[in-house]
Amino acid sequence: MNIFLRELKSNRKSLIIWSVCMFLLVASGMGKYTAYSSGGASSEVFNQLPDSLKALLGMGSLDVTVMSGFFAFLFLYIELTAAIHAVLLGSSIIAKEERDKTAEFLMVKPVSRTAIMTSKLLAALVNIIILNLVSLFSSIIMVDAYNKGEAITGEIVLFLFSMLIIQLLFLSLGALLAAFIRSSKASGALATGILFGSFVISKITDLADDLRFLNVLSPFKYFDYSRIADGHGLSLAIALFSLLVTALFSAFTYFFYRKREFGI
Image 1 (cartoon, helix red, strand yellow):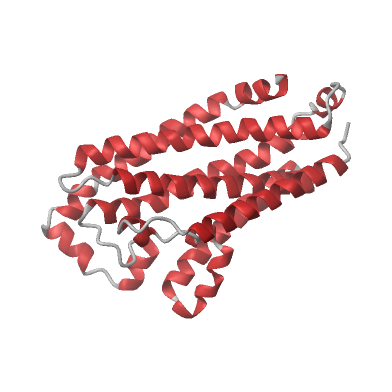
Image 2: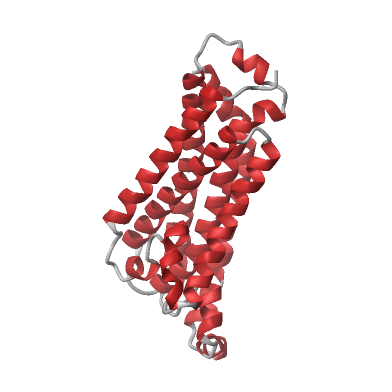
């Protein structure tokens, strides 16, 4: 419990900053909705954009002139931000003991490495849930402020639930790499590189239909934004697959952490 509280306290400032940034991202994004939905010159410019550019921007076939389609477009950037937070948190919460030269202090405590890892992961879980809730309530409030049509609160909840699954996936990936790779800088850089690599893959497959088989390598393509925006919900099979991969990453994290030799 002491380790759990210690981790919550040490990440408190960072969480506040990320939460404020997430609120500002949602607020600034929704502020642009009027330009898409007005039907004026700005809207006409967006309609004339080539399909390839729309795909790169994250619009795809979404109808951004209605709130459900616009939020699906904005959600890509909300999810990317949350994923970056998750993967960096997973990496740093494991690797920081050696980085900060506090591994000796932690290892001499009368607790097992399994208990230490559990406390750290639970603290990280609390952090990503809080950021997810901030994103959820920010989205509901800002959408309600700008939406003149049918309410989409149900769709927003599904979007943010899918984001939580992706957050868990990247959190476990970051923790796994930090437990496996001794260098905190290398593990953090690799985790971030994998995340951005998967994001690039999601853009490539948007441009080339014959490469869609690569979507399995990109969690950003696991859930179909258009399907959620149209009110068709989430794919249960994909959700279960994502949670299974998360559980597998977490199991290997425990394994490598117990075998790890700390530089103390």
